Each structure stands twice: as C-alpha cells, then as structure tokens.
Length: 88
Image 1 (cartoon, helix red, strand yellow):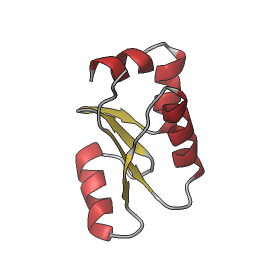
Image 2: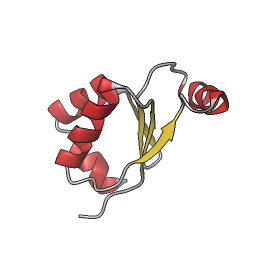
Image 3: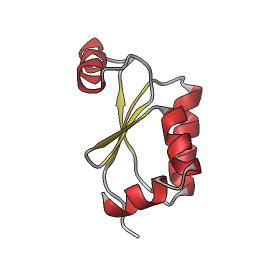
C-alpha cells in the first residue's frame, strides 16, 4: 500500500509526537515529513496560522488536517485512520 505525504509539525522533545509517529509507523507509514517548530519561530507561526492550534503535534495526511495525537488516536479507534491513509 502506498502512503500519501504525512506532514507533522513537531518539537524535538515531544512525547505526543513520538506516540503519533509510532502509531503511524504501525499503520505502515514509512516516512513522515517533520517540521520542527522549536528551531524556527516563523515555522511555529506558520503552524498556528495553518491549523489554528498552538500545540504539537499537528498532523496532515495528504491535504487533511487530522490534528494532534489524541485526534489521530481517536480516528484510529473509530476505524477512520486506515481508510484516510488509503484514500489520500
């Protein structure tokens, strides 16, 4: 199964980001493009403008903004993560 671009706004020391990455890898995602907002304030501002949220991770699957780790885990629990990965 091929996977779409997964984009994650993250910080270097972020336990929720690590959990999100592990969950995505468990679904067969081989690559996650990471944008580290703790390295560049303009990237943090970009994330806030794009997502309306201030916390990390902020995850995109293709063009779909999934949200943070809790949103990703809830989507998986509801059975929606795998179809989103397949369709994006």
